[in-house]
Amino acid sequence: MQIDFTKKLLSWNRNLNRRTMPWKAEPNPYRIWLSEIILQQTRVEQGKAYYEKFITGFPTIFDLAKAPEKKIFKYWEGLGYYSRCRNLIMTAKKIVSEYSGHFPSSYAEILTLPGVGPYTAAAIASFAFGLPHAVVDGNVERVLARYFGISSPIGSAAGKKLYKTIAEDLLDKKNPGIYNQAIMDFGATICKPKNPLCQLCIQSKNCQAFKKGWINQLPVKTAPPARKKRWLYYFIVASGKEKIWIRKRIKKDIWQHLYEFVLWETGKIMPQEKLRQTSFFKSHFGKHGFNIRYISPAFSQTLTHQSITSRFIHLDKPLDKLTGYQSVSREKLKDYPFPKLITDYLKLLPAI
Image (tube, rainbow, N blue to C red; front, side, top):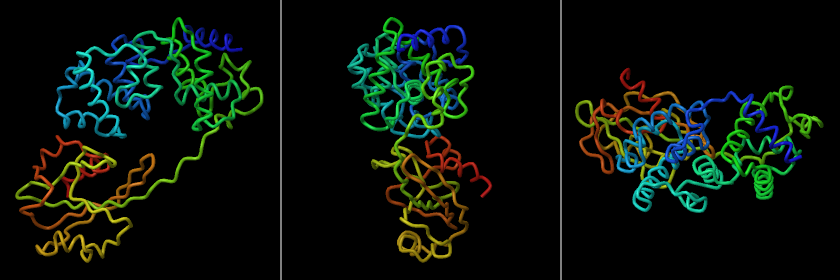
């Protein structure tokens, strides 16, 4: 059954796979690594534009390693999961300093790079160096769960071990890169999460989910944790003519190394009419005689484990000094990397 699956998959890949991506058949390990980091928890269609932007702005790993951090985060802006960008920077510097700019060529060494787990290491090892390591991502898990009728949840420890074992057994050891790309493409285009193309599937004859009517039940997923709710109130405070106070987020929290306006996190939603009476407003702005000029509607952003709601509060006059913040001209704000929630609001600033 395993041999039949692999032969049919490779036949489909040769004759019917029409999925094109800019990094497919790419021999450069730097570009392969870049694409894999970008595609972690990112849809391919969104990732394409960022991949093209990065290889244009940073053609080699030397260019990436020596680039200012702020510039790299600006390139990443809007892609989310910013820990990936921090790992990108650390890995580039490590490869330049410890490997003289040559990408490590063994699975074990690749696995030691910041932000590289078993899936990413297997992808780089097989695509760049032809090493026999099977990739196991969401597409692969879905194909295997349906084909073999696996009920083990994909997020469980037992499930991860089982899927990894089966994936390694199915792998074409002579052409691991081609096989790995083929099974991911197959999951993305044929064995899709919703409305899979079972009538066109070359594997349907032996697919347990197809034969037993389990298509919509597999793969089994573990229940996601409840999202933490956070309320962030941003104060737009001027500093002289056409300047605004901002700061860099440095704590180990969401959006580390990105920038933001003057922040007050409340822990709960705050009625607009009570903002001026809060201790935060009184201690920061009340004693200076500030008033609120404008309060924005609520802006929301949903992260994997958190739900963020924000409002932007404009004050009516400049503030000469604000500890922990720097003043930046409005036209220079575009040069700083901000969370998407703030970036969306910045598009409205000229009209406010």
